[in-house]
Image 1 (cartoon, rainbow, N blue to C red):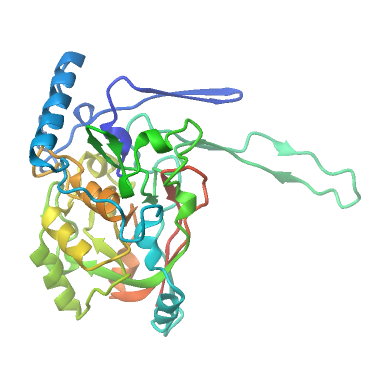
Image 2 (cartoon, rainbow, N blue to C red):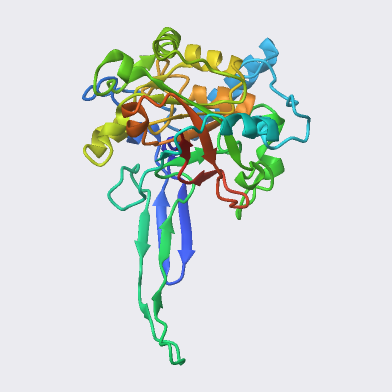
Amino acid sequence: MHSALRWAKPGFLLLVALSPILLVTRFETPESTSLRAADDAPVNSKLPENSESLARADKAVSKKTEVQGETPIGPKWWPSRWGADDQRGAANMMTPERVLEATKLITTGKTYQLGRVYERDMPTFPFRTFRLTIPAFRAPTKGSNQQVGRDEFFVGEIGQMGTQMDGLGHVGCRLPTGDTYYNGITSAEMEDAYGLTKLGIENVGVFFTRGVLIDVVGMRKVERLPVGYEISLDELQSALAAQNTEIRKGDVVLIRTGHGTLWKKDNETFNSGEPGIGLEAAKWLISQEITMVGSDNWGIEVDPPPNKQRPIEVHQWFLTKNGIYFLENLDLEQLAADKAYEFAFIFSPLRLKGATGSPGNPIAVK
């Protein structure tokens, strides 16, 4: 995401024992992070201050759900169109036919690396650790060739920092019957301290399909959209028309907001919020039957949210309700500079059993 950790319950601690390292991380909430409707305008919001208040709030949500016969995010979203046992969501649209169609878009052979470099000074949310060390040199082998070498140790949150893919076990919705994710799978069915037993990223497979860049900031002729700016459906459609590009079933859609120009130049502003799509644009993209949506920001959707009582709702519509993946913190500048609006898109998430997301370096080929 963006960071599911930003919205975790206050006081929740993560202890990771990596001999000889003990990493203790406190998960933060949106209330502990300064989010701004503009780059310097703080947004104030509060959660109930004690467990009794939280219990009353949960009871109110449950009662409303029962009365309306709906969930907090609309009608029941399961079983999936791909079957009651499905764990892949929109990745099911990756067929041999779609791969062959995508290869027809390769006419120059030029490749674009869309992933960011993973490094210590990249923007990360507070209390997230990225540490790569090479602690010692390996002594020469006893053979006459005297081979030497080095290894590295990594400490960090591998699936939710830098360029990252959000999997279907990343975001769900609390219901009276339990926290529920894609295809109606509940936390009780998949939770395990050593990785999800369902909806893990290892189920996803390879993405090889047509990719489309929607250069909203290019159409607006500005360097970047401000933090808190909601990209409208009209802007998406206008940018597509200006590019003479259309969206097709099974596409991966990448939205350029210009927010990525802040990467490592102004990490504080980059993390403070973001321009992005809202529910109107999200619902239209879902109706186009895309496989994945990506952007040069950290969470795809506008932040601070237009409705402060419904944060991160676009995530729920894509991931939870429709099984459509997110790809965040992309570098889209070279694609935009070359006006490469249509291309073959290739990405294979790491097969991390039980993980909620994956790092990686997506590739566009023109």
